[in-house]
Length: 315
Image (tube, rainbow, N blue to C red; front, top):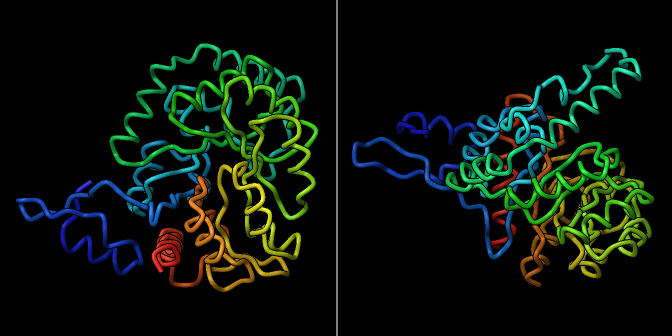
């Protein structure tokens, strides 16, 4: 993507990073490869979730990542599978207010999806990976929805997909009893699973999951942890840093409101600097959830979040 000086000025006015552009010999500005790894800490984005649509195409998702200057992502499986040719009806979410389909239809749809996944070419997956890597955006984590419902062969597919995308971990929501089975596949494939916690997730939940499998890990949402447990997540991160695949960076108040970074009770800066100072292998994945202020937009607000993390790490 090429930008003129005028277009770059408009991006700067909206709050998007002015860095990450090179002046070409013809006077135009060309997008350079992004770099959001500062002081050894990889900062990234939860995409396309952050853009408000998990069904966003892979190309549009990548384009927005480049606009924000991020060089790593936690990527949902939907854009990948759309690129691979999945019939969209098999993965499209049910619209709000739409009645649930007949159980027989649901079962048939799930079976068709699992059958399709059984025929996926991993060469095509590597093609997807190359496109993102060539653009300078690494796929570090792959997020799967509904993974606990996968039959065994579909779980093998999920781990193979993750491996061929070049990711180091899978992420999914935590369901402690289910982490025993999923952990067996994690150990088999030697790929970590970062279980995402919400307000009700406490230390004991993750500790139980850790006990089931060597490759069971944690995706610590530091905002949820703070507002749900009423205490800083840093002691937990410090104790189990080798089990934590990534954190979700967000700021929340103790009464559970999502707010811009630096406006809540979550010790965002302290946690980022602890990851930096201790050289823990933990990605800092921004998860955008606070209401967009009047006169702004999602992209501008996410750009502010990226800048906040950069300043915290370089400060």
